[in-house]
Amino acid sequence: MAKPSYFLAKSEPGVYSIDDLERDQRTTWDGVRNPMARQAMRAMKIGDIVLIYHSGGVSAVVGIARVVSEPIDHPGGEKMTLLDLEFVHKLSEPVFLKDVKTSGLFADFNLVRNSRLSTMSVPGAFVSWLKGLRPELKKVL
Image 1 (tube, helix red, strand yellow):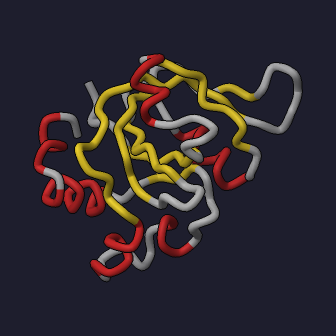
Image 2 (tube, rainbow, N blue to C red):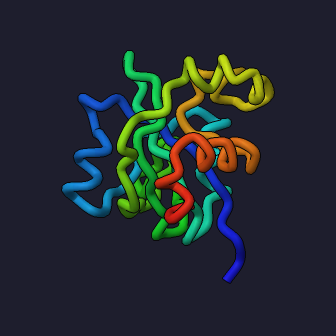
């Protein structure tokens, strides 16, 4: 099996949280209309890993999901991409955006550079950094 690629998907916790995904175990990730974010979603393959990020004032990576379906365009013709995600892990403590920024390591990462983007690819260096910060992730990433 090929090594998974990593992505990040944002959601406001009042709309759909990591707790909701943990309860549901699987969900259709939708509502993404931005062309750059849709491009990131279209690059996702079954088995890829998605870091779940709470926006809306929280600004933190809070959990891990796995892509379990190929991305498709909205069947109703809306300019929206959707795919199914499966719950993998909820972080014991969030990794806040302020910590990512103060690390000084990720100035080129869209999370820092273009923070309004809702879905994006994640550099391998960021995944390694997360594993060092949260050792619990060594088992799931």
